[in-house]
Amino acid sequence: MLTFLVTHPVGASPTNPAVSVLEAQGFQNVYQQGDVLILLRYQLPIADWQNTSRMQQPICSGATSPGTPAITTDVREAIQDQCLTSLIRGMATMVTKDDTGTPIAGSDFPRISFGLVGNYFCAPGADPLVCTGPNATSVNFGSALMQACVDGPTTVTPRPEGCLSIHWNASADVASTANILGQAVVSMMNKIEAAMNLQHNTLIANKVITTTGAIFAQEAFPAMPRVTPSYFSVATTSISPGFLPGTPNPLTGLPAQQLIAQNSPTFQSLQKVGAQFGAGAGLIGFAIAFVVGLLVFIGVTARSGISNSAPIGIGAVFLVFLMAGVLGWVPYAIIYSIAVLVMTLGMFRIMREMFG
Image (cartoon, rainbow, N blue to C red; front, side, top):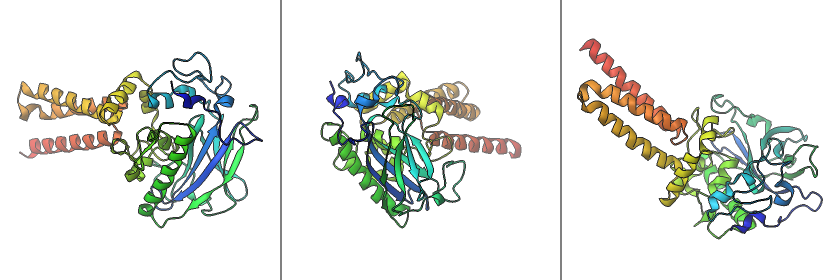
């Protein structure tokens, strides 16, 4: 039984037990030159938050009442249990305020207990298909007056409120930010691991964020392993997509169909299989799709020869990968690459038929 789920709140404000705003850090040039990321480390105490007025599912797996830990020996399962992650939308929001105290960005908190949440500001001139959030021009980077805050509905008592001045981390360019951001997130993960009373090396091992630790980092900023790869385990960075359309972008995270897929029993089973080999669910899903696609290709081309059936076989393989993408097994960037390959081969085939 994992006792960290019912650990007594650490460092909660005596004037507002509903929230502890623990650390706020700002970074520039994270993914693109000129963008800004603000991270907030927090605690929403379980005693105040694990109830039906604030959560969709306040009872942990295998438990009979709120406040009882999940009955499991798998730390990743316990950390991702809905009794920690099913906050009702709008119940707790990270709000970045400018020099005048005006809110300029907001993001829902991903979980109760200890966690990370982030506000991302798009670089000036960023492709609107890639980044649809607030613009970094609204951020006075380095200002002592700007704050990262927690806000919640006035109908909830006690209402979650609290602000911190932002500690700014200046950098010249994207390459420089990778180390600055990576070191800061590693430090935050160490603090979360200690505060949750987790076994040593659960979230951080050899100064690298584990696949379990990546859960917290990606809740705050989905592409974190992609922009700071040397600070994450290989199993995490190998399946972390970039910001292509249809894949996790800095602001919105996973597209809806993949969020649904990742809550499915199939995806959870892939995660368990992957954990046995130090790989993520995406990598295992890719391996399965590749094997199935290869068998389909062999089956289609075996009867009438490679020359006549290759285009059909390749198209069948693409359909297999497309279905794997819809199920959330394979990052969409891979599917786009296969689509380009299929269209290129098809174009060459048509040209050969037309011109001999």
